[in-house]
Amino acid sequence: MFAARLPRAFALRGPPIEGLPVRKASAAASALLVVYTFVIAGALGLSSAHWMTNGEYPFGRVGVGAWTVWPRSGSREADPYTRAVNARTGAIPLGVGEGLLLRASVDDGGRALDARCAYRVGPATPQARFWTLTLYDVAGRPVDTPLGRSGFSSAELLRDQNGGFSITVSREAATGNWLMMPESGPVTLIFRLYDSPASVGSAALDFRTVPRVERLECAP
Amino acid sequence: MTLRGQFALATLCAFVLAAIAHLAAVLAIPYLAEKDAFSRLRSTLSADRSEIIAAPGDLGTWLPYPDPDVALSTCAYTLEEGPVRVSARTGALFQSVSLHARAGGVFFAITDRAAVRGALDLVLMTRRQLDEALATEDPDEPSRDVRIVAPSREGLVVIRVLAAFPSQREEASEVAKSVSCTIDRE
Image (cartoon, rainbow over all chains, first blue to last red; front, top):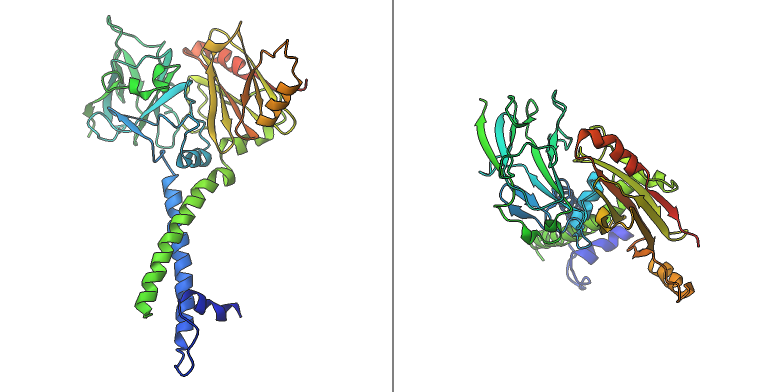
């Protein structure tokens, strides 16, 4: 009974006029079209929602040099996509006033960070009480290298006379602040500023005050 | 209408419905997710003390992109039974407390700079609980609590303690573990 009503409702046909022949085949065709509509709508709607909430926050990003910042991700104004991403990954964002997260998966030249290459990170940072720099593998875990170090905090660094610093991220040992690369794969650098004026207004960030991520050389 | 016209109309309807399904799915994900931080920590709702989620240097945590220099601990809260009092002692290490609404996001964050004599005390309540507290309060002796109205009844208190040196990791974990989150009955 329901099936008999469907074609009239969806095929936008008026009531059959007396004397005119009624095309029997169009009932099945209309039912197919209805199924087609819902299948396409469901597939497109759900897969696009899945795709947009699967990785980084899709909206509200600000680029500073090699780094990407999502200034509103830790505030009440976080958009629904940001909330969905957090819900799916289990991430606990840094609140505004608590700190700010900067993420780099590319170097200053826009090339993806690769474990086969060596990088120099430094020399300046935005104002903050503390900061940490951490190297992650593609799965979001801090790198696990034989050196047992996956990052630096601002207190641990060797600095030059002007207060600047330089961290070498490479597979081969380097002098000074050395962070060992994992064996292979794409990597991500995350730079966290704790208790920083920049977390309240990201206007305090400009490319001169964030660390540069410079590619040195790459193994073949 | 020709079959081709019907097909075009059905496709158009499909796109409109797809957009609606997309928005509905994005808005529903925080409530349906099973791997979000609150759902994972729901079992700790009755605990009176914060529990460590990611100890400094711990690579085995479920938290994505954990900071290896930070001890992160949480209390899951519900305001069903009354306001929740969060008490943290601060020490020499950087410490911050943030409040996350379930499916909402961060609605409050504070660092140890705001501590009074080495203590950070917050009282989390609903709007109704705040009105009740204000109505029953003695006007000559106003409460000194920092009262925060939560946008939803459930959420997480998140404590971060920074261990700037590996030698501070143990201390940072101890501080992160010692935050109390109790139901405030007055």
